[in-house]
Image (cartoon, rainbow, N blue to C red; front, side, top):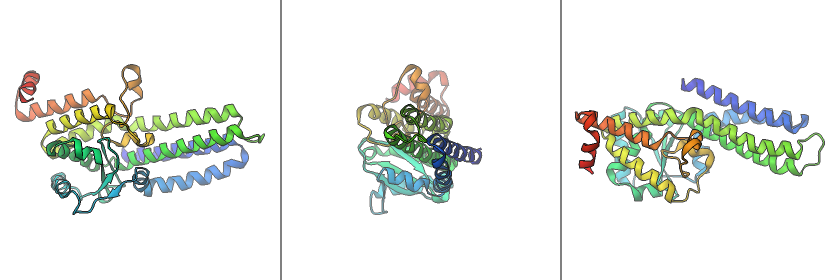
Length: 294
């Protein structure tokens, strides 16, 4: 299924780029086709590097944050996957994501803020979640989606800027340029929506199974969700779907239909139900039991 999604995403990328070139005029069509080919190859083989570069992430050596490395070693062994490389994103909003082509080329990136906000148990839960993405083999399709979204957004912005000022009769009118600048990023967001929600539920479950501690991940998600509302997110909107929580303030009501992440309340509920079942308590006694645990 993930291989099919990858093919579909790359096909959508090609269609959007060629469509933009056609709208710009006959002279730009050939260039857009060549760009589509280059982007397909680049997105498949280098999407992880592109995403890491966009966030100015740097690799952490084993001597840096040794406790973090020990947790990744332990959880990777429990998951039965190769140990991923660790990267640090210099941002204060607490968050994390996984990327890479496959488990053999996986990367887990955490922000500076997450190391300050979460305790050891909660951080272990987050790392297990990210390793869940690696184990479930959905890191390639999500990384490609983020790369596609970024590429389409940048192309649309360039079209909107240069096209609106162009007087070339073969080029787009100012109205066409404005439409491209608005519609293309929306299309890129819809691409991400097709993969984000279900994969987060899956990574929550797999991560909870890897760590054996669903409650730790539930508590971490609650803290990270609160921080997403309180701490500014100078992060790339195109890569929002990669992160464990949406780095931009969550919306309510009808706008949640356009969120790149599922309901945080539902994610936490499912994890705590897993904890209740794992502990052997009656599901009906969940609320009272969790209140007693604090």
